[in-house]
Length: 205
Picture 1 (cartoon, helix red, strand yellow):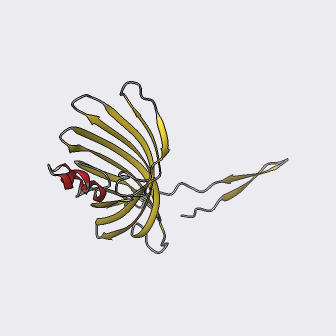
Picture 2 (cartoon, helix red, strand yellow):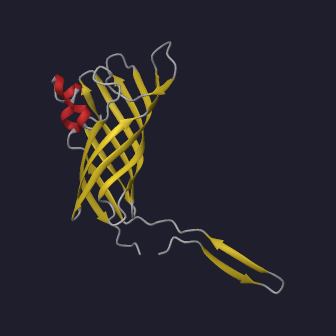
Picture 3 (tube, rainbow, N blue to C red):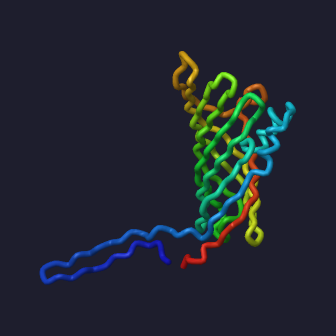
C-alpha cells in the first residue's frame, strides 16, 4: 500500500477536474499489552522500596499496565497504574505518548525515542488532600521482541509540570520540572522496564 498522494482526472464536456487524495491512514501492524514488573515492589514497607525503587519503576506503583498499537516504524502507547507508595498515600497515573524507531529495517524492535504526557494524582487518605499534575516527559529506550513476547528498557526525563491541589488557599502552579528529588540531583531521569505480549494484525495488507 502506497502512502503517496493519488490524483485522478475527472473529464466533463466543458472542464477537466483533477481530484487529489492524500495518503491513506497507516494500518497497525500489531497490538500489544504489557506490565511493569518493578512497580508492585515499590509498595513494600521499607525505606528503599518507597523512596528509591520508584526511580527504577517509571515512578509507577502497584498495578502498572500498558498497551497500544505498533505501526511500521513507531508505537502509540498508553499506560495506567494505581497503588500505594506508602501506607499514607494512594497514587493513580495515566500516560499517553508516541515512540519512533531510529532504524527503518525492522519495526517494533531497536532503539527509539519519543514523548509522553502524564496525569498524576496523589491522594492522602488521612486528610483527603489531593495533589494533581500534568507532566510532559521525554523517553528513550530499546525494545526487543522474541516471537510474541517483548522486553522494553526505557529512560524517561520529566520536562514541565502543571500542578494543583484541593488544599485551602492554594492555586495552580506551573514550571520546569526536571527532577522528582532535588536532594539527589536537579536533573534526574528515571528508568522503566516493560514485559508483554504482541498480537499480530492479520487483517493488514
